[in-house]
Image 1 (cartoon, rainbow, N blue to C red):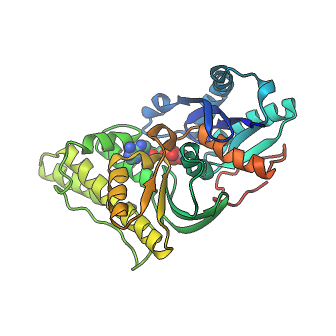
Image 2: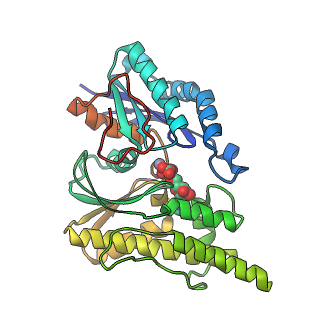
Image 3: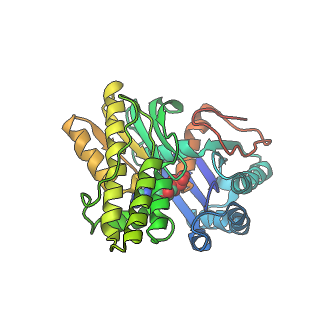
Length: 340
Ligand code: KG4
Ligand code: ZN
């Protein structure tokens, strides 16, 4: 018997709902982005995000069902992201999912947003053999994770300050590119010289699998200040390319180091920054030289979406791992540690 799951994702600034069958067949994947609303503030305003989710969530769920050509009665379970994320934003999705699960008398499945990002890889490759090393790179996280089986995560390293996506967004902001900055830097960097500006790469202690991006971000800000003070012209494409190269170098080197240390031959990318073209290209190239394989989701499944939440939920459904209707939002939920 097939399992049809409706999933809801409202952890940040995308209001998303999806219908996925058996964790692999995406019947619909609706994403309503609030980017236009937050752009004028240069970043996500939590209170505004919550209000927008409230306006949009029912429409997005309706659209997900309509596009899947299904109604509520065809669902086997309702899944929702309950952390990590903005508490007010998470609460909207959690409340909507709880109400639907209660009304239908169907299981409620609580999903960690990061587990969702990881699971985006299983949507296209359900038979993927584990263990893998996964680099989770988003706006809020930069984690190296050893995945031994579905649902078993060992954190090997994490950022000590800014997340990689946060650094992309901040650098884009000081360059006056707009928001969200990651895709804009990625596009502009294509026409720049990545050796034009010397920028630091934080490797931290020998063999460390932790990251630090605040020094790199500050180096870009200092470079721009000095140029302004001296009245020198700034080639934004060169800055974007040099920054992207410095960030990607560290991400690639540390991910390969983790794979080597743990003798793992498959590497997975997850999260919004996994859409970065240079990261995808460089890690694939360097991993191949060591006989390792790299997989990553298509760009639309790297950034926030609900299909990835339904995929993660399918595996919990199979294990009978359901959340109580008292499920609450947990804004700083660690990967692999459910709190319900
Ligand atoms: O996973 P995601 O959609 O949301 C979070 O969970 O944070 O990731 C969003 C982050 C943003 O910082 C955005 O700038 C970054 O992913 N991002 C990129 C690219 N596309 C999105 N960063 C670098 N290159 C990209 N192509
Ligand atoms: Zn995300």
